[in-house]
Image (cartoon, rainbow, N blue to C red):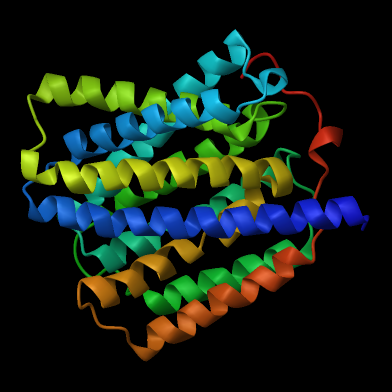
Length: 301
């Protein structure tokens, strides 16, 4: 592995971990917003609207003109946010309304398996035993943390739909971010999600209480950080390894929930977190596919 690729690999893994921690924090901020009477759809709309504004301002200040998205790329990224990411967020929060968080988490965090298998099947990732080993370790860690569903299929099915949506999101992102600065890609994706969710919020007549504005602003800021880190990771190490590293997201949520919401941390949580963390050194040792060597994105996407 060349020094340059080693550096890119380490940076990509670090960005994936940062993205997972940021996304894990959003669940806690969402809990605070719900305490103030917020409904899921307007809360998510505000979250992505704030994130889009922050990302656009940041991209304008420090963006690189040669890496700006073309009109075609911008349209695709807007659509990706409007459909895949907005759908994933809506399904996930809908699942939380009808099923325990542990059940939803267990089913939803099947997405690294879906993403990895699909990425290798589509030729976006090269099959490697280390990816499988990291995936198995992380999956067992998630299984230890969360409990199996014991009533009803509505919540688990919604969570499975969210997992499928986020897998599609990762796969398309790996293709669409080629040659585009992560800040620009993040801006368009967040704007697309905000637009579709704002439309849905308007149609349903739901609004955001003034008391929930603080948590909503926090959600937007953390989401902006998470988006930039996520796209930066996918561009460097690919969708499969990024999604596996992002298994740290539920671990972050559980730890913060224990610290801020007085949730209990059991031995299963500790053991599960240890397994998830043990997958990271395996991923760090992989070179992965050089993004510059990948096949150009087909025009049909």
